Image (cartoon, rainbow over the protein chains, first blue to last red):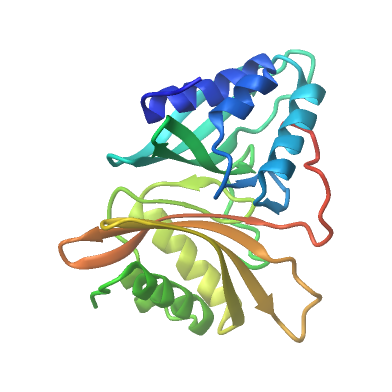
Length: 134
Length: 134
């Protein structure tokens, strides 16, 4: 499954997320030289731990109503950086804050894949950073 | 104050942070098409709010012992992405978790600047993501 643009790789990544489709999630990711941080989570750098984390997340969430708002885009011939807001709508759950994600897509011979995903929850009410460190 | 490589811009950014040097922090950042997320904080996209946030953070922290560990690097002729761990050592404070930051540097005519900074606290004990959303 090859993606011919960064947008296609991003679409696959978020479709996999929304549809709880682990095979598609695995296809969207590069295998090496990758990095992933889930909200509040540790830095992960191996394909094994990153894929295991997605397997757990997709299994726990199941299909989910997810809208993705791209707020920043830096596009280059061989890679792209998108900062997005992920809006989850789960009718049977309390309102969730959006998740901010910085995503990096990279072009390899086979096509485009996601190689970096750094996500954090945005506060529901915007406030200055808590000041603990920065 | 122009920086001739991404490394120089990164050094300036973290020296500004460690030395609580707001002028250097401002010089390290691009003026437009920028994005900044502090740990637990909202997405910021204007120079005015990003600079105000740094002014507040630097004033609140003062000079600080900060070590930066680069864990991922994607370098291109006109920009670079570094994922780093920021280790803060504050002898009179409880041990702080490292901060994970995804930093994007961009080359303009005048030199290199930082254009994106997405930071989040890493849990002190690595655990699976909390599963709330991902």
